[in-house]
Image 1 (tube, rainbow, N blue to C red):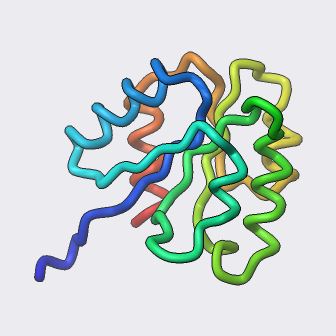
Image 2 (image 1 turned 90 degrees about the horizontal axis):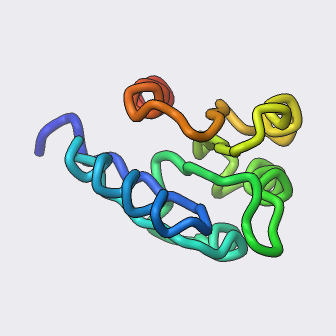
Image 3 (image 1 turned 30 degrees about the vertical axis):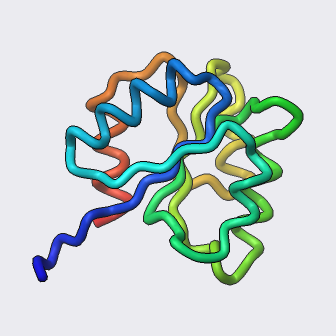
Length: 122
């Protein structure tokens, strides 16, 4: 088995267009991608945990920062790197305060995202 096993990335965003675009790009880069448009399903993860979570701050009925806090307080998920994304740049501090490992403001360059993923999963 090769040392670089396929990294699993989970995308949690309620914009299907964004999810599709990121999914295609990450799969092209060799990542195994799963996605959800419902933030609460992220908290239900028990098995098949991703190597990194791409989490939108504003999802219908859910605040990504609350989800991130809960993930970081749960032993089984606390070590999963979380990159939070948001269309509003002024939430970076609160995203990092919630435990996010990094932050990207939408729209972002795919190369920026790839760089951050590579850094956090290596």
